[in-house]
Length: 353
Image (cartoon, rainbow, N blue to C red; front, side):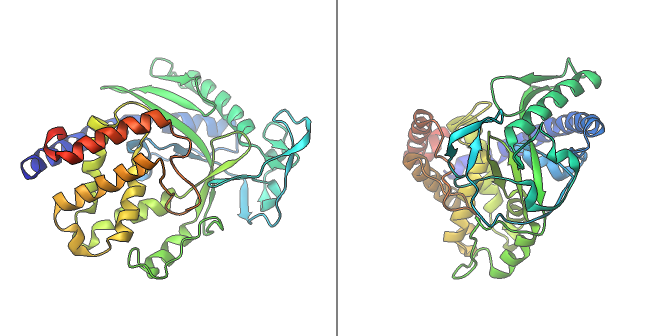
């Protein structure tokens, strides 16, 4: 694998430059749209034009759109089974409770809330319903595309319940999911049982520094909001190589291989967030610097871990370990990726770009 290492890392550098150019263009578009939307609906914040959102775009994760008017979050003390349809009609049997990364969200969980959050366009029986909120947001995005004169550059995608847009950049078309997010700063979700004891990575001190960053709840489905730990994950990534190891280079190389060879495409079954989770679990199992000093060995260790997860269709979320990130992934597509990874591991020279 040694002769291919320099070639792979060179391609990674070129890819990063290309992505940075795309990110720059997409950031301008998202900032323009959200500034207009925030003027039309007080519940939405303008997405700042800054490096904060670079990584979201790079890893094809949802671009979080912060909402405002909700403050003083408290975990729900009692399970509340729902008896309504999305149109508000009463059901004869209750809807099942949330699972894994999902949860209900009630207005009463916030000490302060704008009156708009109590309106019927987003609220049923004091529940803030994500699919209703997405309906409002989708209409605002569609209107903003016209108002901002971006019709030739941005288009809405209609084959998803989430809000997706296609952005024409100077080099390619980029598809983005725009996900409204209720940010919960300074509080850590009770579903995220992230215990520092008996671990060497991250250190207990780092865990206690990251938890106050809080989490977010994304509008991604019908009734339930999805937990997101973007800030915590970003801090873990940024601080990986403080000891001089090659963690980030391995991650960048694995992402390059995924995009070029193992799982290409606009909406791949394996995303960079999956690779990031594999990296975190591997760092926890191999916390010592000596395990991350030789690129070849560290890189192949990550690929073997990825192959195992994809083959078993099972990858635990790093913070909410009861959640399997591959639970709803297409089995056939996972098996295809597993075969490509197996072929690569048999002879790492063959598939390297």
